[in-house]
Length: 209
Ligand SMILES: [Fe+2]
Image (cartoon, rainbow, N blue to C red; front, side):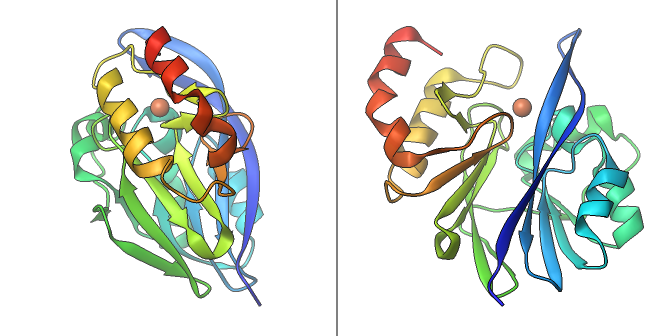
């Protein structure tokens, strides 16, 4: 049986630079009836574990270490035995949320994870924060972009650890170069496609966010 993409939305807060905001996060579950990868264990380990069911969790992959994307990762890891994987450039952000629990492994650009016979290629896409990654699944014609690319433009770059020119480079060079039909599965809100977003790059650069 081929891998498929399951999805749930969980609710909680995002805190950084002294502010706290209510947020809804997309949690992506890629796999088959036997094994899955969880992309971004946000807010609610019980809900994610229920969506996973009896399936083995190969890894809990963090697109980046903003607290809303990782707050339930240790609890989900404890329940499932799965390793938490994070790009090491986000280690400092991670420690702000989980000072007593390190990730179990590193994500690196070009690394490939395999789940249910489907490859997930790690693309280092910094800018929203230093260790932001996207996961490209060519067999599924999908890319999981975390908070790097949304329907309508780049992720936020106004807070600490962020840089707008860097996120533009990541989006232009690593994401908009994927096939136009590639589905963009985002960290918050609606999905889009590479082909729908690519024509707007210059508008985003001109407006500066
Ligand atoms: Fe974020």
